[in-house]
Length: 540
View (spheres, rainbow, N blue to C red):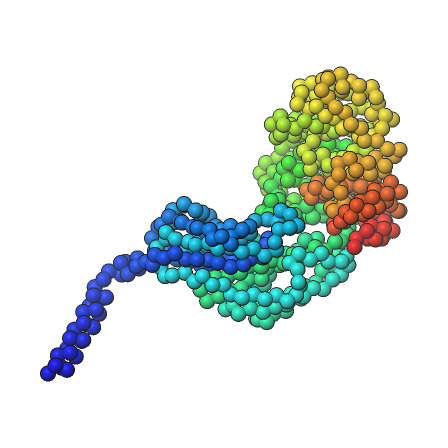
């Protein structure tokens, strides 16, 4: 009888538990939570690795995090899987799925360790279940370094390794770029040619059963020469605009909203506006006075800008161009008026100054009749957002004079060219406007030496560089690309490097400067294969 009673009691307890489970509302079950302190502890490769720990909360809670003693040089954020919002210490975290993301602070000195320890304890949140605090293992045997500088020329690189992860992914690093699933052990082969980007980054992601993951990046720096050419100067400018669009601003996906359109007959109309184009992240395209060349129409369709800015009055770019742009679907067409390069430089200077809100204190002074002298300085002016004011040899036009007098914030002027292009009288007149004015002059015995001396003065080096023929519109095209990269434009004759330019390059190499990316503007008739070979000898 006792055994029978015991069996009945056990059955009743089981039945009660079953009934209780059945009648508990499903919402109450879903909101059942685990409150616990979760420790995320490990080692992370500095600058190239990110660790993700996945967790789910069933109700909102306030983020509490404590740092362990081993945590130096690293930090955390909490984000949802779409990175739509970022949370940190003290924020209220809504119910949902999240990642606790660990990354490192940037390297600030050679003494900073390459591997950083971290120890974070997360608390204050109602977890759906206790988060997994482990990561998959990721072993990469080749390459040994995460940042790799490759020799010039065609190169083959392999990325080899293994992981115990449930899933391993590999692909080019970048927003929304696809990654392929690869098997462990893995061996991925990469090929680099002159058509490859100078900087390429690849990512390996290892993901475990709980969704925790390691992202590790590998960067490859491949020095090379890019020849930007075409059937004519319009096609060259179109191809240069395509190059311009390849390079993102502030690591954001590129979108060209604005394009500047210049008359290709006179580089003076374009060079003085290069700094304004840089402010708007706008490539400069060339056109004839009355009609858009086919190559330019094609490039505008490809870039899909919302705004096109015409450089010059209707006498420089006619209303027929406006009609053609409307047919291409351009929503907004603006014009910077000016019947001559001097007037255009004054109008551009006003807009640059407005953008600088009175904080710009330096301007470039260049000759309206010697645009070659301005070429190297124009790219530097664009990077520094210095306005370019055009003057005559012995006279400061009234518009330029008025601009200087009405803008006393300009205390420093850089004159480009020797006294045969801009006289001492012009220099003295500028000094007379304000006793605080400082004037520097960049000169040389010819346009090539002026170019080399401009490069020395502004000091942007040879990492990113354009080589252009000094006698034409090529300079505008080169300045447009290189100004975005913060580089230098150098002039040379078409057949061989000018001695002044070669001397400058030799100086830079002697200082251990690293030449990575060189644009040659124009086909071999503009910049010869001999110049190409000479520049190639500097790429290591």
